[in-house]
Image (cartoon, rainbow, N blue to C red; front, side, top):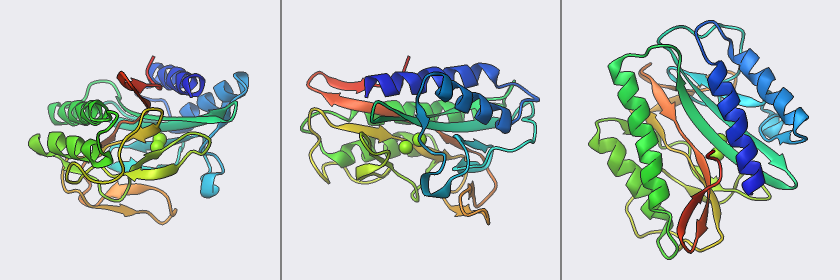
Length: 236
Ligand code: MG
Ligand code: MG
């Protein structure tokens, strides 16, 4: 799991360095796939339920599961990149939202709050805590800052499968659900909207967008729960 997580983190770092006005999400997708081939890892999303790309590329009002395309990213945009791979039989999964050039103040805050909510969720992933302690920590931080948590998509267990039980919603009361145990590996992934929480899926059957057209951010880490607390596997 550490090896898979590290590869995911390194590939996302390579993509992050390429993001600038003018680049297309298709170029980023190809780069991610080439890097997987080079490192003898297999992209986790391509072919998963028929998903056609190596990365999920979701700019601006796209929430998750966006398709890569040939439209150049523009100054002031944001783009969420979700990426996973499998190597030696184990999966890693992580997402980041990256600014394209200079972004406005509200968008900067949206990214910071979403990132902070992921950190809060991770900090709540302690042995003998409950699953929904994570959910509650994410929700509190997001709503305290005036943004909305997406309900339709959730974090998940991860290991020999990309998506394992349990599901990890980004909202809920604390102290509920299964007990967290040392050795569990999970992916925590808040999706946060600047406006309303509602999302809808486009006709491609995958791309989720905000109902009000406002922006959305997504950060995700694969972590391991250890006796000493959470270990982030997809961070460099
Ligand atoms: Mg992911
Ligand atoms: Mg995930």
